[in-house]
Length: 290
Image (cartoon, rainbow, N blue to C red; front, side, top):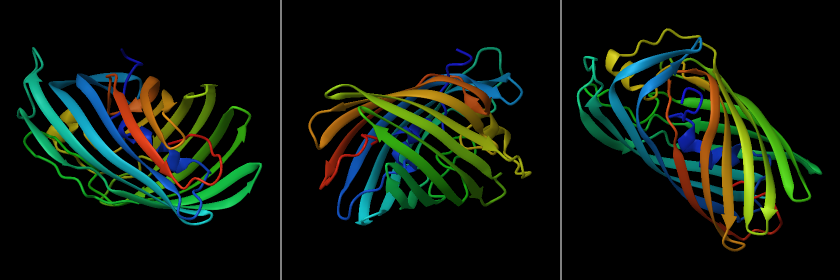
């Protein structure tokens, strides 16, 4: 299980990775997706330096997220997401004295809004993006449960990609600047997809999140134990997503992390994300990156 782990921060964002693609929506077109996720009970975390640490309780996360893209004008797309999290601090781990109280917590996560601007789209697609995440979550002191980063995050990024035959590939990179004494971090990745047969696409994607370790933010022992949205979380992951097209406008997705490494303060536990999406007013073919 050491290298098969899911990430509290990023796995619920798998359905929003299309926000990082270089393809924009046409004016008036777009899509929306509703995603459900779970990270089953876990009590072990990866730490920097190829280390592990045990938590004193079993923690579980469930989530629902609404994600959407809308073409403001040709070449300019508005992107947004609204997450809702339900977290649990469960039974104490045998032989360890609990640091947190037992309990559960329901609240929103970080609301996200971004503008994606097409720069070039002649065979090779290039787009720039600027995103903002708001500190719209909440936390409990006794249980250590927290549903979002307690900071504003500002992320300029650039993405480049191309479609070819039955497939596509793109890569992106950017720097996220956080307030409230959180470290800034680099975010980047690669994604490739292939149409296996008419209704089914398979995608592999690598996601990189590397903290700059440039702050001295202090977390409480309770928040450190639960690991939810603490400072200097980082990882490199390889993940799989499957997309099934019900018709030209509706479809289903599922995704999970296959392998992860170079991680800090993230749980060693598998996860599952399921999504249902709908498109409207699509005027031309684009990779199915919802």
